[in-house]
Image 1 (cartoon, rainbow, N blue to C red):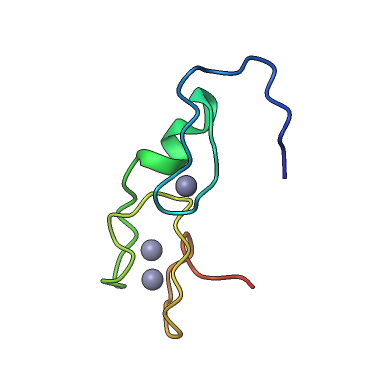
Image 2 (spheres, rainbow, N blue to C red; image 1 turned 30 degrees about the horizontal axis):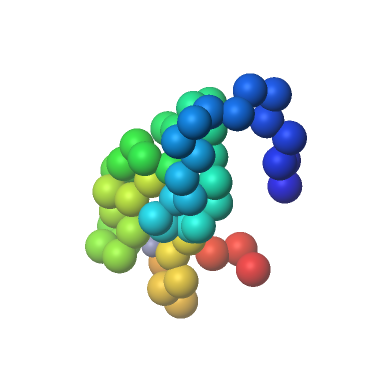
Length: 65
Ligand SMILES: [Zn+2]
Ligand SMILES: [Zn+2]
Ligand SMILES: [Zn+2]
C-alpha cells in the first residue's frame, strides 16, 4: 500500500487487471507479460495479476489471500 507518488503522471489510469492506479515506475509490473509456466490461466499476464485458480502453481501470480 504505497499511495504517495512524488511525481504524479498525467495518465494515472487504473490497471485493467488489478484495478490499482500506477505510475511509470510500476508500469512494468502492470503491463509487462510474465512467462510464468504451466498455469494456462495466468501465463502471459503481468506480475500484478492474481490467479484465482485453486491449483495454480505459479510463483508470480498465485493468490495469497
Ligand atoms: Zn495491475
Ligand atoms: Zn502465473
Ligand atoms: Zn495461475
